[in-house]
Length: 239
Image 1 (tube, rainbow, N blue to C red):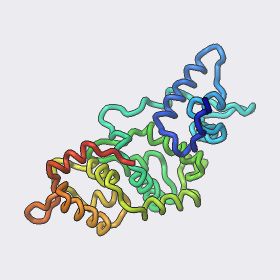
Image 2 (cartoon, helix red, strand yellow):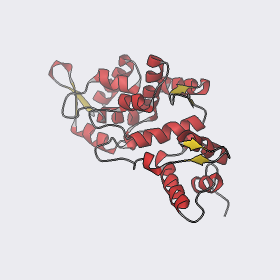
Image 3 (cartoon, rainbow, N blue to C red):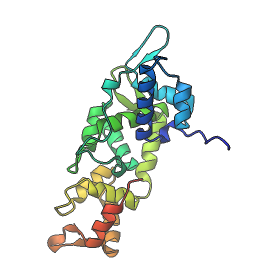
Image 4 (cartoon, helix red, strand yellow):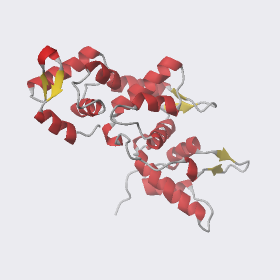
């Protein structure tokens, strides 16, 4: 049987990285007292260099002998009750939050990015976000300053623009709608901001959804979900 292909670190799911960190914690608690990046990378089918770079972002301390020190207590469990499911946060929304906060402040902390992703449906999982930012830093899309603030690299700026200008997908739109107040008419301005697109671009998508019967225009022009739309909303997973 041929070995599984090595995956780029930026494509690793934060939940997978979290499981490997738990495994590493158990290894460190055992007789060996530590773990190697190679064994961790093998479990993820990721490159050693990429995973090491992600670990360096997450490291708390480094010894003079070149060893990195991590504290399990500093990494909470994933998806606590009430948080938005990560599957409902599209890459478009995540890039819009990262790039938007960075452009408005010149740098961004994990917390300020998280606030941009928080929604009426619930807050974003801070641990999940920290792990995703770590993998994107390892992929050289982001850089971490000495003040523990995130900046976009040239490659990151290009990726953010590529995502922003790409055609709006149905999964992205439904996931952003699901983040808002579902017991109220849809707020197109809020959804467009969440997606990092202009209102006219979102209006094009909503017009198509109205023609398809997933949305309807109530008295006064307010957008509301139809029964078909609610079924699509429940089944949608953001890409």
